[in-house]
Length: 118
Image (cartoon, rainbow, N blue to C red):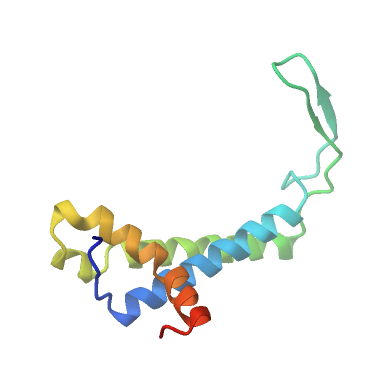
């Protein structure tokens, strides 16, 4: 049976925001052109697989600023979560399990809400 951890509310909130920020950053990067700077398109079929890229207009200053803002926030949250005082209360041998439980805590809470188990 898996150990149940009592995570502090600020740690849960930090992890939840980290999930949200990573999702926003991932979605933004998928929408943006492949190159930050304007670049010509290319096609290369000399390697083990063909690689093609269309011409890229590059990112606007606003797009670059948004990516930078999200990356900075992601870093702040990752540091907050990974260095939280809670981890000193968890035995070293149990920290990987506890970290995994924290990462999955939001998904579990959502499942419980949907099934009415609150």
